[in-house]
Image 1 (cartoon, helix red, strand yellow):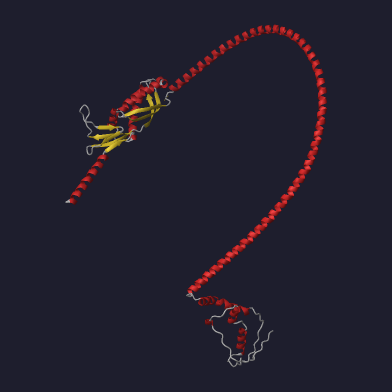
Image 2 (cartoon, one colour; image 1 turned 90 degrees about the vertical axis):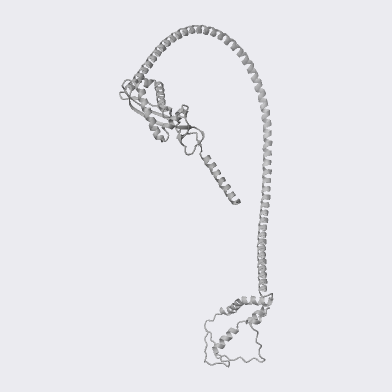
Length: 472
C-alpha cells in the first residue's frame, strides 16, 4: 500500500511539473523590433463585432492553446526605389521623377491592426512591392495636379503633397512613411532645362548690370576723390613752403649757436685728450714693465714645472711597469700552482675512487666466495690466468730466428721421443715456469693449478742431441 501511494504521488508531481513547464512555454515575449499578432479567439471589439487579431509591440502575452496562435511582423524599414517615368503634369508635359521612399510597419494601435489584417504572412519583398504600387499611383496623381514650375522650384510643396497623399494610402495597409528623397526632375521636351537656362541667363544679366552700376559709382567716386586730393595737396603745399622758410631761419640761428658751442667744446676736449694721453702713456710704460717681469717669472716657473712633472711622470711610469710585471708574475705563478694543485687533487680523487671501487669489488668477490679470502683470491687468479699465459707466450714470440735446419735420423730416445720433439720441448722449457713467476712476486701458486713434482735423488744425465742446429 505504501509503495502504491509513493508511485501515485510521484506521477502526480511529474504531471504537475510538466503542466507548469507547458504553461510557461505558452507565455511569449515580443521583441522591440517586431509586432506579435495573436489571432484566433481574441475577444470582441467595443461595438460587439468579433475581433480578428490582437497586436502587441513589446511586452508579453499568454497564448491560449488550441484556440489561439501567434506570428510576428518585422518592423525593419524598407527602402523602395521609385523611378517614375513619363508622368503627365497639368501642362500635359511628361516628366521623369526618380525618388526613393523609406517605409515601415507602423506601431500605432489602429494601423498595427491594419497591418495584422493585410500584411501578416507576407515576406518583406512582397510588402515592398505592394507599397511600391501604392506610391507609383499617388505620385502620378500628385504630378497631374501641379505645373512644371511648381515641381521644379517649389520642391517643399511637392514633397509635402507626396508625403500627405502617400502616407494616407500606406496607413490603410498598416505602413507609415519614414522618409522621401527625390533627385533631379527631368522632362522629355527639355522644358525644365530651358527654364534652368532662362534662370541662369537672368541671373547672369542681373549680375552684369549690378557690376556696371558699381563700376560707374566707383568711377564717379574716384574722380571726386582725385579733385579733393589736388585741392588739399595744393593748400598743404603752400602752408608747407611757409613753414619750411620759418624753419630754415630758425635752423640757421641754431646752427650758428651750435658751431660756437662746438668750437668751445672742441678746445676743452683737445686739451683734456692731450693730458689724458700723456697719463695713459706713462701708465702703459709702467704696466708693460710689470707685464715683462711677470712673463719672465711665468716662463721660468713653467720651465721648472715641465722638467719636474716630466721626471715625476717617468718615475711613476717605471713604478707602475714594475708593479704590473710583478703582478703578472704573481698571477702566472698562482695560476700554475692552482693548475698543479687541481691536477694532483683530481688524480688523487681518481685514485681514491679507483681504490674504493676495487675494495668494494673485492668485498663483493669475498662475499660471493662465502667469506673465504683464499677462495676469493683463487677467483681473481682464475680471472687473470689468461693474461698470465699471454705474458709467457709473449716472452718468446718476438725472438727472431732467420732459419732453423734440423737433421733428424728418425731415431727415438729412451722415452720414445724423436730428436725434433726433444728440441721443441727443451725450447719451451726455456720459458720461465708459471710457479717461478708467482714466486718472484711473493705469491704461491694455488693447489688446484698443480703442485711442483719432487725431483729424484740423482738427476739423469742429459742425453745428447741427435740433431745439430745450424744457424745461417
